[in-house]
Each structure stands twice: as C-alpha cells, then as structure tokens.
Image (cartoon, rainbow, N blue to C red; front, side):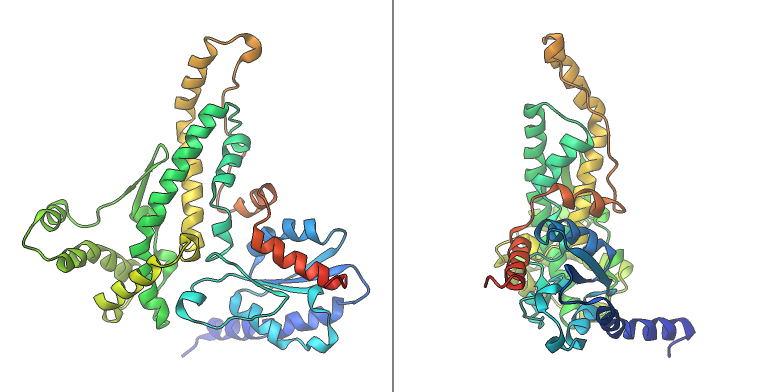
Length: 351
C-alpha cells in the first residue's frame, strides 16, 4: 500500500505527459523559429543541446523534462499530431536493453533512440580522452599523449570484455522485469585502476580460484558456476536481487546472445562507461607527478624555445559536470547528425 509521499509522487509523475502537452500548446507556433525538445532529464538536454544548436541555427530551443523514458514516450502519444509540424517537436530517449529484450519503441521521423545503450556511451571514447589530456591537463607533447591514448584504448577493450558476464547477470532480471537496484552495482567492486591499467578483481577466494582453474577433474560447466558465484552473491546482496530468478541456463543464453552483438556499447550500461572515463581522468591526475618527471628529463636536452610545458589539472571532470564539459567538445555522433539533418530538411521542405 502506498504511503502519502509515494502516492503524491506517483500522481505528480502520471500527469507529466499531459503537462508537457499543455505547455507545448502554450509555446508552439508554426511560424516561429522554435524547436521543442522532449528529453528524459536535464543531463540528456545538456548532451543534445550543442548538436541541436549546430543544426537548427538561430532556433530557440525549448526543453521539456519528462523524468524518464516512459514519460517521453507517453508525451509523444498524448500529442494530437494534426496540429503540429513533427520536425519542430523532437523526442530523445536512450535505447537501454529494449532491442536485446525485444521491447517496442516509437518509430517516427521525430523520435530519436540512441544506437548505444544510452547517451553516456557516446562520451566514453578516445576522442573524449584526447580532450581530457589536451585541455583538462594541458599535455602538449604528442608522443607522450599518444602513449596515454593507446593505453586508454587497450584498457577500455579489457573493461568491455569483462563486462560481458556482468551484463548477462543483469539481463536475467531485466528480461522478466524482476526487482534489481542497479544503482547499487558499483564497478569499483569488480575493477581496480592503476596508471591507466585495469585489473579485474577475482571475486572468489584465491584457493577456490586456483582449485577450479587448475583442476583436471572439475568439469568446465562447474568451473563456470564457481567463477560466477561471487558475482551472483554481490548482485543478490547489494542490488536486492531474488536468487530464485537466477538459473545457469538463463546466464549462458544471455552470454551467447551478447557475444553476437557487434559493438559492446550497445549493451554496456552508460553509467559504467562514464565510470571508466572518469576513472581514467583520475588516473592521469594521480600520474601528474610521474608525467612531469618525464617532461623535465626531456626538457634537459631542449632549448628554451623547445621546452615542453609541465602538465597540471586545468579542468576538474566529475559526474556533476561531465555533460556540461564534454558534449560541446566532441564531434557530433553520426546517428544524431542524421536524425537532426533529416528533420531540418523536412522542416525546410527539402525532402
């Protein structure tokens, strides 16, 4: 039974789609250079805003924060489209696991769904890390920078591969919409960072790990069960998951399905990608002294005009400002550019 606060927030959220529709009616004018943007939350708007501004030049952008994908979709269905030009009213949602789980989404010219799991996946890239090195730390030496970029790329590939079993566990619960508090699933429990190298923590006791990996008498299937046992225990303990929903057949089925996906960003949760990027930032921050020692050694053999500037943190990057700092500094993703260009052409009567 709902308490007063639960009931209040349920009612408040249930009117979001209709409230957005009413506000749209108030502000919409087919003759004005305005673009109406329905997004899940403020971070989504900050992510898309620079790309919309670059495409819809001189348009006033009016955002509508819907507090989740469900309400973005409901807002779309609430609108009487006979009264509006679709390409002046745009909708943006994250894909999440919808395609993997076979869930329906809106298919329309003005409704954008990320090709990755979510918007955060677009930011965890070599391009973003290049900006971090160049602008957040002021690293000017191309050789030193390329070495760090290569380490980032290699470490990111290791991180992605190690997220496959964790994702398979998550999908067991997501497929049947069973209770699972994913915000409590912390990557720091599974991974350790040091100088842009990542280490996947062995979550079973060392003697148990050695026994299962070295024993010739334990079947491969049993080894898999023991290796994954601690992941299950962590998810059950920290995320309030019901163990009765788990089965090894479900786990193997999801693992096999994920392996067929061509790009890990389609199934890696965006929050985990952002965690990786920010941990990489913190690695460089901790490595500042060591990098500056290398620069000083190189400067010993250079003239005054050739001197390489020492690095220092110029911009602090964290979860609270990452959507303000990075989106304006990266190239517009291809799928977003295509979506916005098609709608602008449609608005201008060029299609």
